[in-house]
Image (cartoon, rainbow, N blue to C red; front, top):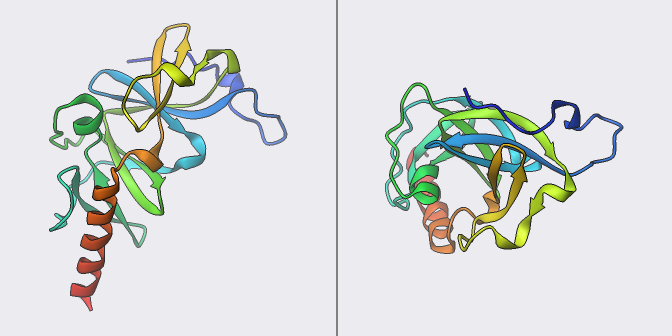
Length: 171
């Protein structure tokens, strides 16, 4: 089990001022990542998505989650360089990405936390456009992903067209 260096007492309390970056930490292919907590909708157990013809290669398909169509994205393909074969032990981290509810396929969710302001290292995280920064934590480095930049422009356009086409076929 991988533990988090985010202090549980630092998780934002309703009337407390934010002391740092509010994130949800997760693991994918043995690497630590996080997304801003404000972009997170929920986490659900993995399932087999329905293929979405015409979508970009990073799109594994779509799911109906509570009556809403959620696009399942292959997080490992983009972040770790290898495609994912969805297994029952994985989870879907549903985030808001430019108006699209998207599910990132992750191996496990560590939990929410607050990174102290001095732990943030936003400018030197790497060249990936979807990486917002990195956090230096007492037990290692955690990359912070910005869901709004995870899909490339052409992938967002392809997804919008594929979803519109799928919606048109149902009616």
